[in-house]
Amino acid sequence: MDSVNRQTARERPDLLEWRKCQGQTGLNAVLAIVLCGSLTYVPLSFVPRFPKKYIPLCSLGAGAVCGWIVSRRSMMSCQRDLEGSMYENADQPLEVQSNTISLQETKFGDKEFFKE
Image (cartoon, rainbow, N blue to C red; front, side):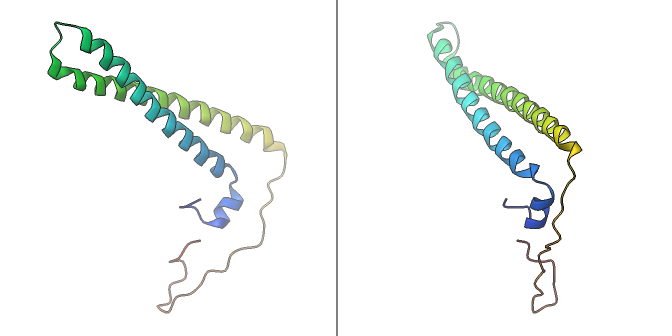
């Protein structure tokens, strides 16, 4: 958890699942861009009347659209799954640990400058 301090991570355990979901979505989007771009490039290169200078542009455009669609749908399904698991655990009481991390004071008097 790079940008989330430890206390917030203890209070919200679903953030780790959200981060895993975002990583998987990014990987799926990159794979969709490569696959859709290549599947567009190959057929266009065999069309004799299609200008050769527009083939890379059309391939990149098709790859970008496919990547956006895949990432959007993947994040929507992850969000649905996380909200569903959140509602399943709603009957159980949320335990917040009272062990708070003491913030170190720097030599300039700043307390919350460094986050763990």
